[in-house]
Length: 385
Ligand SMILES: [Zn+2]
Image (tube, rainbow, N blue to C red; front, side):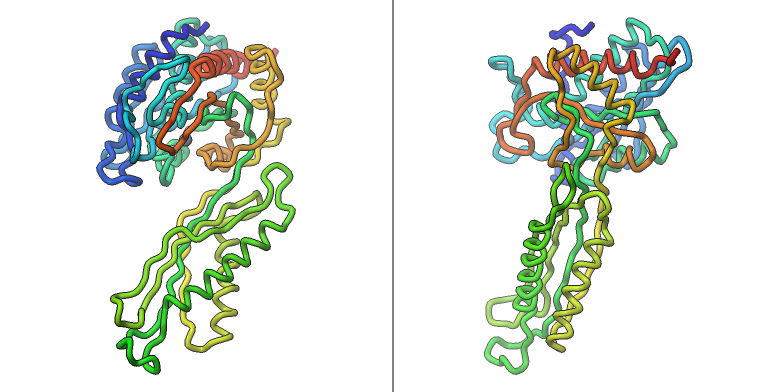
């Protein structure tokens, strides 16, 4: 059983410990301090706890609790890092008001992490009947997920995973993936008074942008995936030109594609490659290159997967209502776990304002989440008789 005050105290400690992702926001502290806290917490709770430096200054924590008998292994995964705090008044105060706790990471996802920690502590105290609980508190989910990638690279495997990103206490079994890429157009620098000598790289990028918009319209009109709808594409960052009185020699566009099941980085490469080939064929002066960037696949866990059934049954008992089994709009580490052969789903607390200047979580939902994780772990891991 979960003590609400215990959950609140842990969440206050987590939110008041700054852990802004330093690859996202320069000057962010990263996970060193918060990971040390989590590692000590799990050790004190009675788990086997390991603090792992996966890159300079970047840390994961792996906790393990073995059951009395053999059984299945369940991985509870939550990220330690947050996005930046620009525009926030009091990002680390962890202020509690009217049942809500405010601050950066309150919703995304220190509340989910607090639920995992409290559940793990209660399971260690009460004893796990069978199987094994693995807690992975990971670095860098908000940038390139080196944390969960490292968990997988170390060979840590489980029969299922629950990632406690905020889902409003519904079960999410699907979300989109994403792909990043850059396009550069090359013109010819010339004095602004000599149009015959100059080639305008920015104007040429305008042609690319128009075709990307057309691509987006085609995607939006396609039926897409039954749960997720169609993929999408948008421009993210653009830069180019040298000074006012010159023809720009270069222009660079960074862009993003959101992916549905069956799509990947090569999908975007083929789509943009097609655009660039057509523009080159139409005008011999048009010159451009495509550079693929990081991409991560979508999540699609079938609803007949055992973890979905156990989680739905436990959530129904704890919440007194039928949980929805659906999708979320954002990408999560569950996709990496799933791709590594660990069936993964999401269930986490209720809140608002993730990545915005006013972020909070409903404390009641964090208590319920901890309760669900506690019972889900006991039931899922126990050897079936
Ligand atoms: Zn998150």
